[in-house]
Length: 169
Ligand SMILES: [Zn+2]
Figure (cartoon, protein in one colour):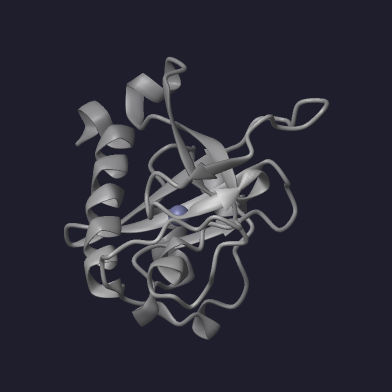
């Protein structure tokens, strides 16, 4: 994806208020990010454990999405392993998180959200390129090459952005 400036990134969020977008904790210096190796920018809030963010290229611009994850339940997850719905990487239980995203616009203000299982570290772009490997013992062997996985990730991302934008599309 193309490099984003802080102003463009903050302006891109579709499911929070302008004020909230201004206060979002960024992942670090934006000029140190290898943008050309990313299909989307995803990061966990460095100061708020239950929040994460995505910025996804969309048409001529970018769509920013605030994600929340539920408070972890006592006793931990019963899931032994699970799969990211965007990049289809199989992880051990903590490697995938069920994130919820408020929908954009009126639907979101009315309390509607969409949920998705996504790599907990939001590094899907790096998993599909083989720059990161899942910690799961039973990694599903796939015959797709990295270029095909990138295309599939982009198509899944588009579907997710559409579900968040909903009527605001
Ligand atoms: Zn993923």
